Length: 204
Image (cartoon, rainbow, N blue to C red):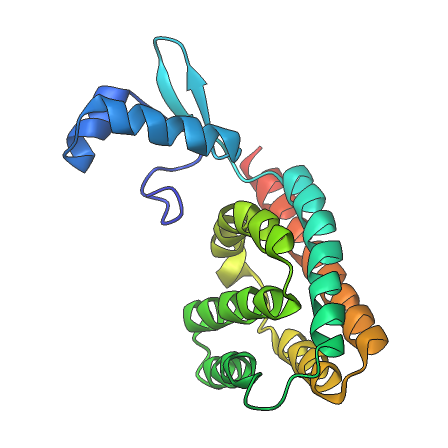
């Protein structure tokens, strides 16, 4: 409900209200709210319930700085692993789906395929700790991307970057895989946070 905007940023909700909407007792709602607070998505306020926090460009800059290094490490490690085309089939399929989505100007389908690409890249890196940390941040990134999806230009360059990362991994070039992906993630950070800053200014 937070990601879809059904629970909008800045809105307040009592635990009893949320429990009724979800058809459950207050206890699991409270437990979920505590987890979401730890992820920076909500704020628990005594006697006032749950406040849905806005997407912060500062938070996204910090998150992307961490993701950039971890995913770039995963790209480097994947390039060292000697993967075959068959091993990289899921990565290639995600890129092809992103290309089709851009041709059809279907940004929601593109975002879903983009998520698959990054998840598969991290998996191919073979480091369980990296997978765990990236997974912890994925919800906030997905929410920020969702809120800015239709404000950005068609991500043609993003797809070209993905293909270059794939090619470097397949060619066994860890230096290029790491550098191309790092540049890609830094550009994505700048686009996303720039959009978030402009959206914040329009609401002031």
